[in-house]
Length: 227
Image 1: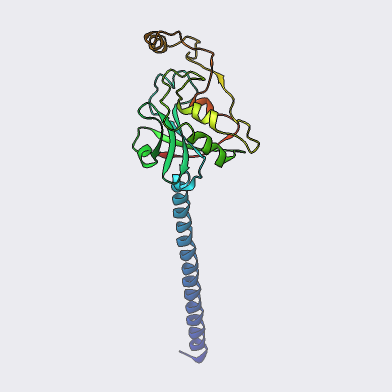
Image 2 (image 1 turned 60 degrees about the horizontal axis):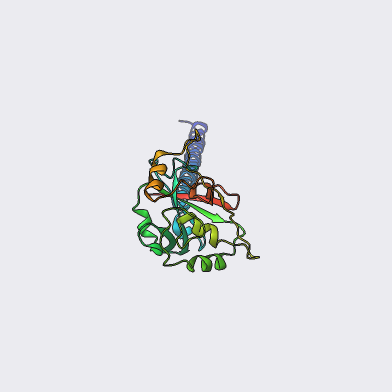
């Protein structure tokens, strides 16, 4: 091999070595970038999973119970929502329930219920005063007849009478009660239910329901928790 060939060989060897190093550096760079990208995706999935958990919520936020199968309430009201509770701390809610009436309940007890919980924030609410208003109803029995202005109270009624803005004005006004389906027919369940209580169905009387409440302009949906 002559000197020219020798130096050509060295030059080619040096170029190949540089190309190998360059390729390796590129692999290291893109490999690191890919790793960071995977971390970003994992972080995004984690944040998406954590988004809307009760740890992300604030006192005064609402938790709406969304059922998997319809019932007598969801068949005559919007959506598949049959209950609403008021978050008053990181680990407890204030709610009106058939067993116990208006009471404070651990948040963890909500997670074992069928379906899932939709989480919402009430815009422009005076949270401190609204929670204080709701606490005044502690101990009242549950209003299974869904009537206004009596000595009992139901879940969405508790929210409706408790939440006020910073001027002390109620944020939620009553609406006409609905016990009819999409065709306008009152469900036989409700006819029989009120007959057993010696009453006619209070169709159109002032009241509220959790499904309609979740659609009010002041209610901002944050996310949901799967049980």
